[in-house]
Length: 179
Image 1 (cartoon, rainbow, N blue to C red):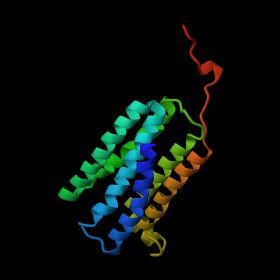
Image 2 (image 1 turned 60 degrees about the vertical axis):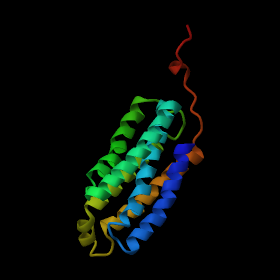
Image 3 (image 1 turned 90 degrees about the vertical axis):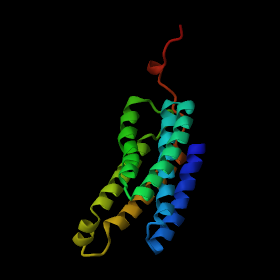
Image 4 (image 1 turned 180 degrees about the horizontal axis):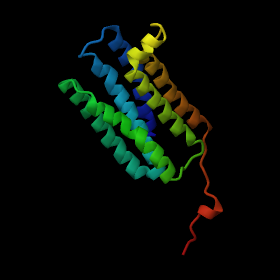
């Protein structure tokens, strides 16, 4: 519950923080753009961990990852170095697909986690190819703009997953016999 609350709160805060930053981009305003995103990423990842590995581990990860999100954002702002933020954002893109196959889901519609990761990776690729995309489509839309649009799809996918999922009951072959 706390993970979802922080995810949706962070996502809503991104809208305002990003708008504020993009009105007049500067180093002081970028914190209001980056920090809510980092909190949303970390809370979403910890929620995935909670669902796959258990509540105790998930809640521990929630606290730890939110603290790391704040620290990595502060580091980026202080030292003008985004590498730590990028690593922090990309770790879930590697871990979620691996954990999806290693640990059984507790809920149906788990494939939406993979779709969400795919959309996020696409958004990051669009950001990296910003000017190439801008030139390729004759200066109509930049990769950065496409990154924002693509990133907006992730919360939609997660919301659709939450709307349609239910508890997944194990098949008889998956139930271990009691001693």
